[in-house]
Image (tube, rainbow, N blue to C red; front, side, top):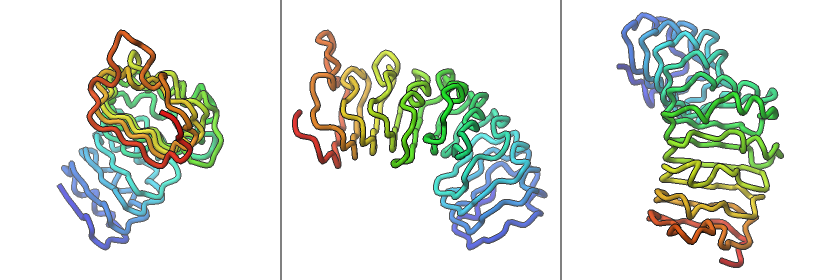
Length: 264
């Protein structure tokens, strides 16, 4: 285990590859903009933390870190994921999968990452082909419990892209941020997400109608923020189903920055 957290480090020595048994490496809040190619020889590395590290690119052979289980990337400056990251099929935590701006087809690299438990996808506005979105295979990732989907607030997208990126029904926590479609996907319902505990809808500013969130039986926390298209919240919010009690598990309810909201 090696932590260089908060060290004012600008370059990592090539000799890092000598630490053959290294399993945990924390480079968060350093000054590293790149990693040496030699880091790809750490075949036993299981956890790599790069949080708030100004990293702009990955080594070409990054896919050789075959034991990697946890890749923490929040706050980095990369524009796309490393080539063939889909070969790291032991990954359980991937805190930022950045979809590149070239047609967004690299989202297909998620296809074989079926052990993911925590996943954040940013740059979803770059996905233009629905087939690529389906190929990402989120629906069959049975271990996936936490998912964050992030879009660029100002870019128009095909509204069906979010519809076809349906997650597995074991999901516990879902955040949708910056979605610019007119409607929320049909899969935000009890029968599709029966185990959902936490839901955050943030800056989905063109959606004017709430999904039937009241029928999410185990939902404990609901946060709706920056959804400026909402003027009225009516019966659809509860699910229009008199046979079930709406929001029967809800403990935390937060509304914020919904400036056009008039009627409830």
